[in-house]
View 1 (cartoon, rainbow, N blue to C red):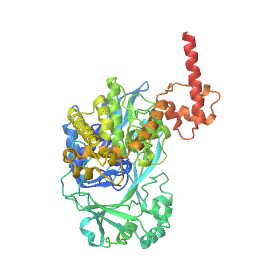
View 2: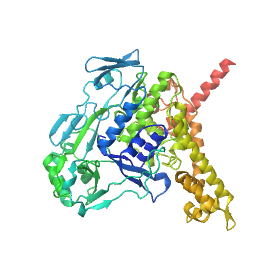
View 3: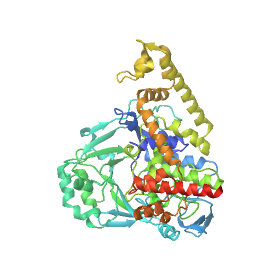
View 4: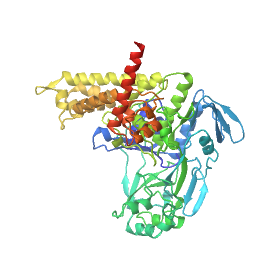
Length: 569
């Protein structure tokens, strides 16, 4: 865990549950090492709720490493990859820094922020992928030789503070949920002693300090020119962009049960060390705080993701897959989802089996990858619930029902996970039947449950048989209640999904010559030729493409199809 010692959050929590539903390890390890659980937006609708947990940084690393070492058919080799080997546009392996070559029919590149990484702290500049670790120096040139275009992005991290130097008595305490929800569908509700987080605020004096020193900040001195994350800006960017705000939140998050480090979430910065010292000590509760590790910014290479297919395979080289921050994304959860799907498709491709590609109507992971390969990104991409058109369907509570059978078909999901899903669905069926069969006041319990003021827990308190079913599986009961209360909205969304699917099923040949379509605008020809959409649905989502552009392509394809049929006849 290179930055924030937390997993999940709004939209990100949905992705972690999707990774888990597909057989991935992230949710299991998050549960194994959790310090605190919170379901964000609990008071809002189910479409925007997101599970999040603080994790033990060192414990997470140990648990994930142990899981990898125990995995069957996996060999780990320590070394720096200097070159991707390819012959005739097809990957053949990699060459390491010591000259050793590893043969492979598929390679997945997951460089994080290490690709030509440069760390900035004030005027201090050093090569590195993160604090204390070297950058990857040779791989960028290798990727360019293979025909990939590279760009440059930036991210940052806040200072780490010594826990024992903070006056928590003056800060707002934030405890975890009284009834925490596990990330993994394999795990029961967690029974752990949760650690608190704390909240404090910056103030006008701190803002004035930063304003006086903006010319020393790499982001404003011209030392850094690449684009950073819009939705997670540095504190010096916040005081400029949101000058009308007199204060900004700072969340103090523990890094581990045995650690004396606290992550100062909200203070991402690359200002010089003396300015960081004064900034931190100007914040309430942190007057005596000791900075153990200073914040810094990091610039790194990435490959604009429109160069990829929806499988995350490079269009330039067969068998070369890219995942994570090299594709322009930001965050563990986005990276883990890409890693899972790129790895699965690498294996499926080598085995000659069907690709695993998720639609925008199936998963947040599908939304993210479609956004990346269709629209690209010129700044670190972060997932939000607002990016998912079908978010009421793509909830955090039903990822297993959406994806586990898909994962099973691809070979990612074992019998135990599938059996747990089937058990849950059986209980859901019994609860739904009980609600339809029992009546009160002339209405079925299901009809009563549609009323905003009525809850399933309230009905169960008055009906013993229903109470037993609800107690057998709270997760199943939660989904039944959501699906009954939001039935009208879900039905409407299902109709929209059906229309979306029709467009997705209307394929476009990969070798289509857009220059031959006379009625197509010049800009549309360029964009279609660059992205190479696989269907009319993807074509319609390319930035700058109009509905009339899509209609021109659709008419052209229909005429060509009729012409081909006429030739056959």
